[in-house]
Length: 139
Image (tube, rainbow, N blue to C red; front, side, top):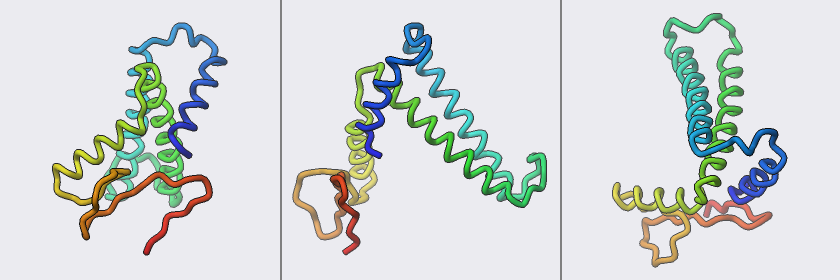
């Protein structure tokens, strides 16, 4: 899924969301914080399970699979909430992520960039957005 697809769906769904007129910027921030908090709690439980740290309730042999399924769901919730916050601020997550990713690569000296149009050095990797039906090539 592309971020612009998420944005279009969020815009459409928000027109139908009950009570959306009362949603403001503080609500969006708190909504995102709540989703990230839920995600972090699950990551903590997974860490506890993997490290055999006391605290999880049951010694369920499927606990890791269950936690990973819950983490998967919370990652989706967090991404949707992040896009809603960005939408309310009039910002686009795609360019924000690309700019930040490339600045960090440059700062840290890692030659991996997203969608930059400049000459590539022999050790530089540039990832571009794929069009519909295109697949990543590993030459």
